[in-house]
Figure 1: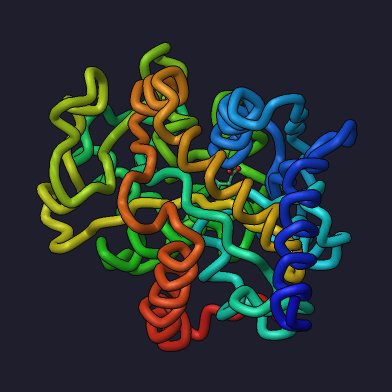
Figure 2: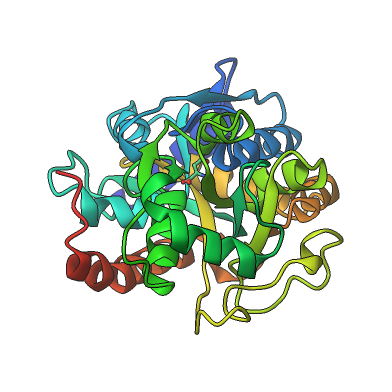
Length: 328
Ligand code: ASP
């Protein structure tokens, strides 16, 4: 047998052995860079259940590593052993934070293996139950008249709630901004809103739907381009675009990542399992009830996922640079 063929056979045997021995008895940490109870935590917990069904004997466990707009969790995964046992579940922050945090110790397009995107989630503008407004129009008028006295909660600089809050305040051309209050995730921010300690938040529907339905917070509008007409609760809320904020359209995507250098046999296995998990009827149903859609297009592949994040960075960069929205 020639030498090249022997090497190729050895490599193929190593690939198969790696794929067969993974994950072994060790749990697989799904690192969520925000606190428990928020939308990133929600999708990661639903995903863990779906992934456990796909990889026999696996034990996906959510671990919350919080702080600095999600970047501390991302750093943990970028620097973890590339053995498939420490993975990241993160959202649009993968694209916003490299622009806002100019001294990041990792590079989003170089320091991760892309494992595929998970879901797309619209956002909702919500307020504490004590606010004296019940419609979007009254809400906007109330904010206009009182912005200097009101607080907007978010999950840290570069988070989705921060991005949405900035975009909305700029779209309604407030003369005075609300005070922004950062939390380690919108789970704790929601608690502050429920308790009336903060006034307003823009968060993914996966966190807000249940609270709006239960009457614990007031919902005012959704951030999708078109009305959410097939959702039993959110169909009753106007889009910001319908309310006169031309072209307002914000949907938050979430994806899964491994540290750079994770063996191809493992990333392939994870991506294939993710693609099957995204078709798991239970996972689909849970997320749809919360207004989210699991990804079914080419962004489920590692290449499609990475190309999409690269395009998002290019799309967002000029907006943040023009606003000089830097976190350092
Ligand atoms: N929804 C959050 C954000 O605003 C983060 C979280 O998932 O807790 O980015």
